[in-house]
Amino acid sequence: MQNGTSQTDYAALAANIKEWGRALGFQAVGISDTSLDDAEARLLEWLARGNHGEMDYMAKHGTKRSRPAELVPGTLRVISLRMDYYPPDAKDGGEVLQDGSRAFISRYALGRDYHKVLRNRLEKLAEKIRAEVGDFSYRVFSDSAPVLEVELAHKAHIGWRGKHTLLLSREHGSWFFLGELYTDLPLPIDMPEENHCGTCNRCIEVCPTQAIVAPYQLDARRCISYLTIELKGSIPLELRPLIGNRIYGCDDCQLVCPWNRFAHKSVEADFIVRHGLDDVALTELFAWDETTFKEKLAGNAIHRIGYEQWLRNIAVALGNAPKSVKVQAALQAHAQHTSPLVREHVAWALEQQQATEKCE
Image (cartoon, rainbow, N blue to C red; front, side, top):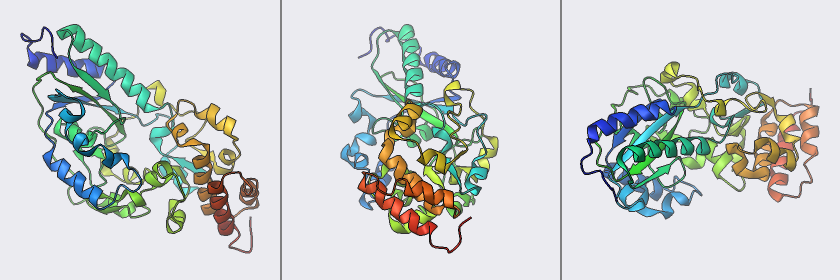
């Protein structure tokens, strides 16, 4: 419950919140109400089609995902915030994808885990609001709970949902993270952003696995980000060759999006590339033991998938890599791995590598 806020000038407070948010490193701040009826209908249809795959958490919270006041009782408004993440010195993603011997990692995962960075800044914003109005009810989120963050950010004028289902901004493209602050403060709301995709279908056409089955519709079961991050078991055989050298996530739809011509590089030290992950040989990463994996990726989003899944992903990429004795030797080193999952994908990769008579 709010205390001491009955005389608050909410329009002035909203303006202050946006100023404080930008001072804390967010590039845009907007405010929306909690009505998500249309989005809820689309979510339920998506779940009914089974497009969420094994992401059971997408369904288990029921309507709490599309009804903020059910997730956090008393919520009247959602403050959405956007923070650029593209590392300033990262190797061009398109160039890395062209070299099958190198590992492609989604550009958002090259630095520190964004969950911690955004949550810390959101808490600081809440502290500033509390200093202004006294105690108030709130909860912060950063891709950490059942929140329809793209829909909320759209309503808050942060951007619009692109045909690839990511949020797009005319000023910043799509290389950014989103965070939210649910609150019981009756702040004035912003108007939703208009859609500016027009007739462009580049994201749909470029998708390696054709996971974007129609404009604004993603079948996660075919998405490389899902396959390399969310899927815990065996990657479907028919999709493995399409993954190429992508070992954690996929940025293809963002790399071809015209709006990313206007994207800004991040100014956050936390998002600077660590351990050369923007351009590193697959064989080098495959040689990491579990201790090295944990040490180098501590505090990185990749650490969440675990060492076994890491090896599984790299094995697939090595199977797709240019044929070479070095790659085959790297795979043979893990052929008797203790994990059945790793052994299965290594065996498949060796079959791909040995499919031709001559190696480099």
